[in-house]
Length: 106
Ligand code: HEC
Image 1 (cartoon, rainbow, N blue to C red):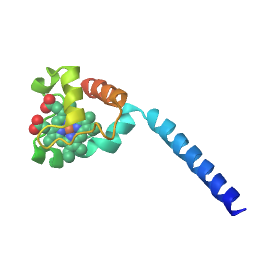
Image 2 (cartoon, rainbow, N blue to C red):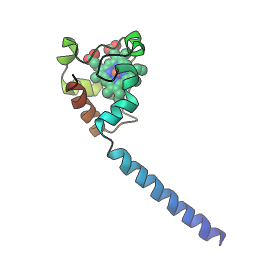
Image 3 (cartoon, rainbow, N blue to C red):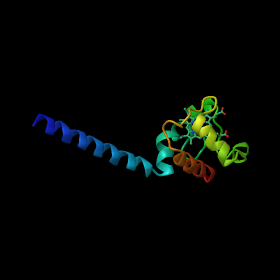
């Protein structure tokens, strides 16, 4: 009985985990942005006082607008100066989606 119980607990855990990760795979860029980036980069890409203090520029800044998508994705993945790296928390696809989302911010 005890073994059976432990077994079903394990199955329950695996199901819970896989439901969770498929959820994560479907996160929309705007939700990812809100959860991970908005604190420093602000709702519309203009940095919050915290972000500004760390040296973040507005995503509408001409210098930032000129940055290529792949360079932006690299900064998000690897970090730069006070910008934290996200390669451990976000998938490459999520980073790519976020990059496009940022580029289209007004
Ligand atoms: C702790 C504050 C903080 C958080 C959270 C943060 N950033 Fe940044 N970010 C910065 C700072 C500061 C810079 C400027 C880095 C530098 O000095 O070059 C930056 C730079 C960038 C750049 C490069 C823009 C340029 O100047 O060319 C991109 C793109 C970017 N962040 C995207 C993101 C994304 C996407 C997220 C969320 C996944 C995020 N950031 C989360 C602080 C943050």
